[in-house]
Image (cartoon, rainbow, N blue to C red; front, side, top):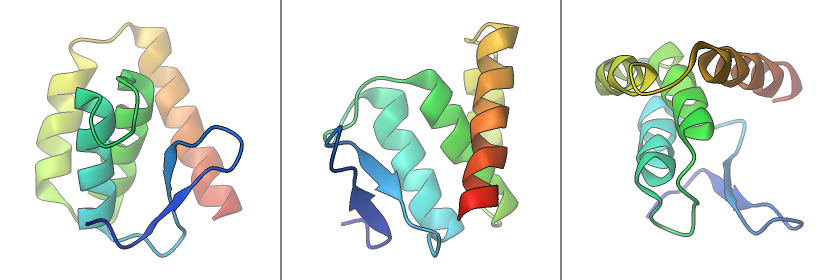
Length: 91
């Protein structure tokens, strides 16, 4: 069970809380990268979460982020990075 997760009231999607750990963020990235746990299959969101997890110390997230970026277009990676910066700014 993810402890630092909230459900977006408008979309019903799992979202990280500001106190989410690297491990929490990594687990959420896995949900979005596989389309499980109520999350849609969304590589941009998964990359964003792996990026945030890596910033919070998850070594596994760095590996998954790199692998996932090879499956994405450059504009998708750029959007994931923009979303990560936005989340950090509002968190």
